[in-house]
Amino acid sequence: MQQDLKFNICGIETSYYPNKRIEGLQERIDQAVTPTLMYASQYWADHLESGSAQESASHALEDSVRTFVTHRLLYWIEVFSLKGEMSMTREILRKSVGWANVCHFSHAPPQQFLAQKHELWVGAVISEALKFVNAFGYCMGQSVPHIYLSALPFSPRGSIALHPTHAAFQNTLSVKAGISVQWPASHHILGKHKKWVHSVAVSRDGTHRLRFR
Image (cartoon, rainbow, N blue to C red; front, top):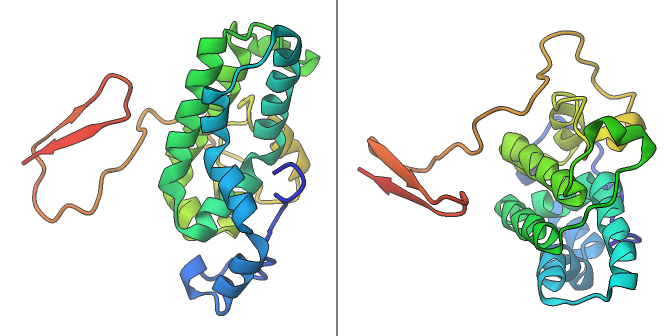
């Protein structure tokens, strides 16, 4: 993924149309998103959960995951937007947060993030990525360009997961006022129901929902 994921992987020329209205996009997807890349994008968290690293190697693994999330997150999201599978990103990120919490990584963050110290810093970075997907998943799932043109500019500037990306994409939309300092409290908008929903039950970890009508 470090080599194959890249900005605008399918070479989309315009942000005026949603993914489904771009002529010939499926052929580009088939060429750019190989089965190997799709497998790695979909199952990297599963491999983290099932694998075991010696203490001497765990630091390098932690650094690799941190680098991936802070520098390849948006390119990774592109893949699922193009495939129409944005909902998968939430479960993958939840699994990786669980992995980081179980491993109890406790290394201090890089110097520029010392103000954002967290005892499970890698878990905190991935949690920030999950909040980004929760907040803008629908928009990003509709249009790859709007990952960069809409979602990124309106995300909190203090996000430790998106800080390097904000710095890398300074020539995009600039929000002068009204930008959120914190992530929105709402995590997900329920849709596709055709009748009134009177109550909703959510599991403690947020991974399961039941609707009662």
